[in-house]
Image (cartoon, rainbow, N blue to C red; front, side, top):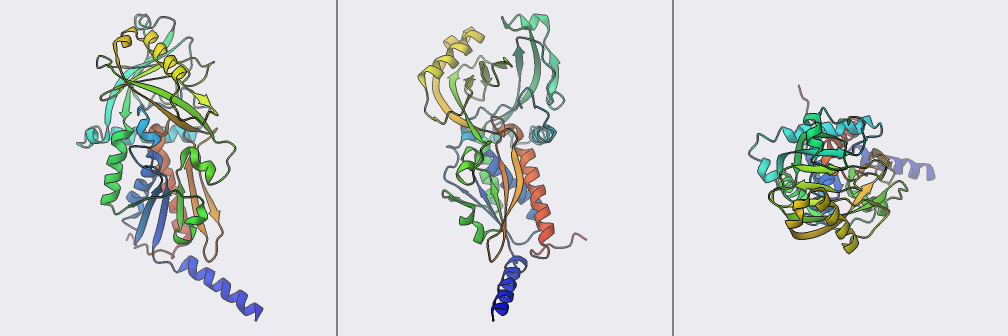
Length: 368
């Protein structure tokens, strides 16, 4: 009798795993990482995996995500610390976005070209992304005279991708494809496991709440947005000894100019701080004195999900009567908009491996 029950349990598990006729994917998180992951999955699998259900769960949607507050400046960190996969994902994202520059969607996406300066106090190696951007070159002596106290620098044209426009655009595209959105805080993977084959974890700094990760830390940033329509070029100043984003930067957007220069590792506060406001304001005005005449519009504070390496990998959860897979995609620091599409493509690559392993669980029509 015990043997029969054991055999019956095994049979039920196999039925749960291999007789499903629908592929169900849950994406947790509705920032740029979550929405782009959902979009890549739809683009790749909707034509071949039928039926395909994709549902995005989040307790915060645009315009209240971290991605909405970001300036949207496409630029990886100056030093990539030997992470070739991230160099690849950054370039894939730039090329994908650049392909939209000649599209009528560019304005609605919040996408436009932006040229400007990275300036340093000492010579530094060329960045890994110099061939990804447009027109990368070193600054001339005459140009460096514009920036007292800095002796080295680069000029290039890059992209701006404003999250406050890009996220609504992506959500509209996803809804057209049948993706559903549910406003709900997910407390554990097991909460969704029984109803989904694959869960994509795009929860940013909140990933700690779903699974402990000692490598994941918040890096608080505070920015000041001002009205200064005369500012036409970005200026990012660097002190490599002080660390990333610790020096003033100025990023002109479509309507407002973003001033920044705060990077506080381990600080969980999302409240605006008057001392940090003063540091950003004074630092930006010292870099470009004409900003003293700018009208301050607002302060905004957000938490960058910092990790030594982006966590982009698969994890299998055993949960009878079926197993489910989690694809983690978080830890993008202050460059989520810069790297999002390359990471989303990698999510779809991992999902493809899962689909191939589970054939004939899902009805995949022949491509012949």
